[in-house]
Length: 106
Image (cartoon, rainbow, N blue to C red; front, side, top):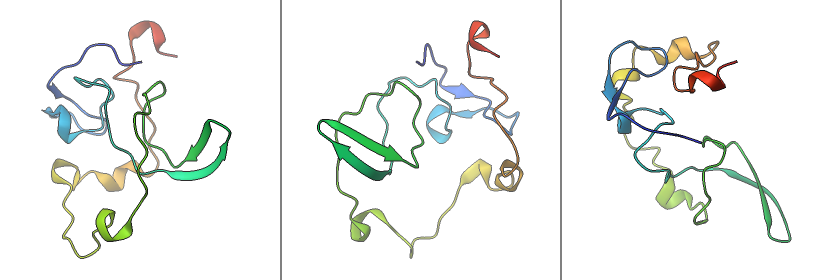
């Protein structure tokens, strides 16, 4: 669970501070996020998903259907801001645990 936050953080693979909403840092001002996931199965009231990019313990508030016409924008020019010159370094990297509480670090 995320405890505390800063509006500017040094994200993984960078040492320059960026605004919290421009990063994937887990310590955010509120626990609400949006994620596109794959629905694997529904068993009673349990929903099984994969390809998820949320932090453990994030509450699931609402489920919407994926509608490619609205959700996928292949024609849009995609920009990734400060991460543009760093994303190729992410392929073989793992978290450096900079957002984990000291007592939770392994």
